[in-house]
Length: 286
Image (cartoon, rainbow, N blue to C red):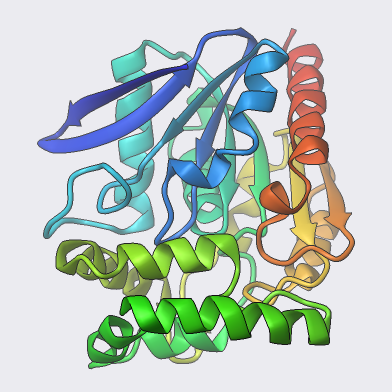
């Protein structure tokens, strides 16, 4: 696994690349996350010889932060620019949550560069979104988010949130692994500003404000795998079911008992599904 940094249109972007064979799997994390979201999956893919790239989106993780364009179109262009930097001709986009919306936007803007999609609890496929994301999009939410990101608050959410989650039989919005990591990162003012700018570009107080549903026909020819936790508290699994009905080239796989992070819930199964999909893409494009 090789880590690196690339300056793409004056933005510094951190990434890792695992050299291997077969279609390139390019992994795009969700809002407030980073490429560490794939920590349990990357070693499994490396062991099995896959060619994988994962990046920190602008404003996230170890990538540059500051005032910028955090729209889906701009983030899709960042993915394209990273491909150019690495000399990649075509990729299978694997997008989680916001990353799924970026993956679909990428397929729409750059169809010649995309040979397959894996949408993991993807945004952009319906209006519903969690109460936390809707509230965080409101004016003045930075004060509340700063308080939530305080170390003592994070510790309390980790303890009591997971306890309540076990009682209810589902993960809560903030007490998941990615949720807690996001809260810790939001202590940094620049990270917080980038998070809010990205969030407000896709979510408002009524839910998701950007939809890819009208553009699904453009991806009808692409082998598409939909992966969802059936207890997802952030984006309902029903969005995946509805999308599978509209895309004849798609397949929906649900993870029973999983929340918004099926790749963390069962990384072995997740890695198997990615490799299986990569093989399907390889046979389809030959």
